[in-house]
Structure formats: structure tokens, C-alpha cells
Length: 221
Length: 221
Image (cartoon, rainbow over all chains, first blue to last red):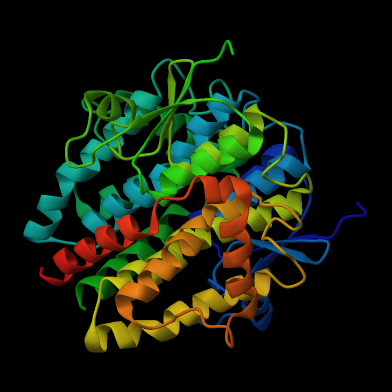
């Protein structure tokens, strides 16, 4: 191998899974370091002193942090199965929507809806739907956000595929329904069923238990 | 020219200035469209329906939004005077700190300090200093964040050089002082005095008036 490559992750973080999925898609071997975020390792604190979070990618002793930055690094370092297309305009689109996914979609769904209840939750739904409609539009005429193949934006939005069923089960309602979001519903299926993604997907029952606990603790505050 | 290139900006937005500076550094000609954010043009709303903000770069009829995404697009489209180095690790560093600049430094200085007063402002200072110390460290051994030349991270942090003196004048104290931040103080000088930056820097007195008004209106809320 000649290369020293480690991914610091947890079993469930979908931000860390971005890096895992990317390396698997490219067929790159690496070592996994599982972190317990309630008791972070000295190495994690050393490698990510700014955010103290997973994922960290450690490549030949050099740490890289921030999952979208890591995805670009992986794509630039190992050229096979590109995550970003070649056309600068298409690259810009993928980066734009990846940032939108983190800044707006994640915020509006996780903090606006999943960790809220009652009136506050209800009032947050229109914004989340508006955000999701942008993504629905971006999928027009495509199987994946990356086109025929999974690309950077698919990995960046992997949390949505990953959390959607879990959130539905816990909340008892569907945010992403077939009628409003036919393309997103199909994408969630296609993405989750892609072999590399499926093989690296945490167990559903463990996710439900974990997110139920997070929600309870957040609502109790 | 053969190319149709427009920058939608305001006279003062340092996010829009990122795109302006990048194009000037690369010697690319473009048309300027000045927007009045209190009365946004139909074109701005059409080209940036998600955020409705400047900058928008319109290249051969295709709109690009989000200033850091625009910088990468400019760098990939016109290769002269690269904004990002070639080494993937160095590219990742620049991207990491550019995001940190927007997510943490900008937030902690503009919203934490500049738009606050009294105790709230005082309590925000340690975090802003901690964030600035990361940037100070990143400048060690370098003239610019990009090394010998202005790079993407310099442009991304241009707002800091750009706003610092204005904030000092309005607030009556120095956050970035020579003793704590000798490298940042020097960088602010070097950056502001670089010809392309200097030639595209809004008038100081207009900036002071504008930011004084913003601060007053924010404190009155």
C-alpha cells in the first residue's frame, strides 16, 4: 500500500460517512479509528483542534478536517471514479448545493423539525419543504445528483437518505412524500441501495434508538 | 473578448469583492452590475433565487452564486495566477480556513462584537481572539495566506482587512493589536496595499458611515 491512511469516525456520523463512502467508491484502503464523542481521544483533539469533531482523515501523518473539504481532497488525490465532474460550471453547481445542503437543508430539517415539537415544529415545515424543493428540482432528468453515478453532492446529501426513514419512524409523519418529492423519494432508494453505500450504512435499529435519545434530551432542555 | 462576463455586486460587499479581486488578479475583463439591496433587481432574484444576494457571477448566461464557490470557479476557468496551490493538501488547508473564516471568524467578530455592546460585546471577545489566533498561526513564515502571493484564502479573509480599521474607528478599540497579532497586522497592511486590492477598495469614509448606520440599526432592535 505504501500509504498511511486513517479515518477517524463514529459508527453513526453521516458527516464521517461522507469520507468513508468516498474512499470505498474509489477503492482506497484505509484504517478506521472509532471515536467515542463523549470521551474524545487525545489524537482527535490533536488532529482537529478547531472543531474537535469527526471525520478526520489522516494521510501520511497529515490531518484533514471538515467533511466537504475532505471529499475534495480525496477527489484530487485519487482520480479514479471522480466525485466531481470536469466542467467548472458543473463543479460549481455541486459545491453550491452541497453547501446549501449543510447550511439550509440540514438546519431546517434537523434543528427546525426533528429536534422540535408542536407549534414550533409545525412552523418550521414550510421552510424545510421550500429547501427540499430546490433539491427536487436539481434532480430533474438525473438518477443521482452526480448524474448516472454517485458524486460529491450525493455523498454530501447522504445524511438525508440516511436519516429520512429514521426521522419518519420517530416523528410519525413523512416530510419527503411521494407526491411532493417523487425524485427525492426515488433518489433515497437508489442511493441507499447502491452497493458501496448499503455496505457502509449503520444498522437502522441502532440509529432509531440513538436519534430517539438525542431528540428526547434536546426536547427536555 | 468573446466572453460575456458580469459581476453583480454592491459598492461595499466584501463577499462580492472576493470575485472582483479574483478577476482583477487574473486580468479578466468583465462588466459590473451594481445592485441596490434595498431594491433588488429582477435579474438578481432570477440568478440567485435561493439567497437573493450578491455576488452573482454571470458567465455566458450561466449564473454562479456563493462567493467561495465563485472563487473556485474563477480559478478553474482561468488558470493564470492561480488562487489555489497545486498540492491537494495545501488546497484543503486553504478551503478549511476559508470556511472557518466565514463560519467562525466572521460570526464572532461581526455578530459577536461589532453589532453588540456592553457586557454582551465583552463576553464575545475571548472567542473572537481565539479564532483570530488560529489565523495568526496560519500566517507563520508567510507574507500572505497564499504564501508569496495573494491566494484564495487571502481573498476569503479580505473582509477582515477591509473591515478592521472601520470597526476600530467605530468601536474605539483595537481587536487585532500589534502585540497579540503581529502577523495579522502586517498581513492587513500587505493585503490592503497590494495594487489590485487597493484599486478595488471602497472609500473609507463611506464604509464608516455605512457600518455606523448598520450598527445603530442593529443595536436599536
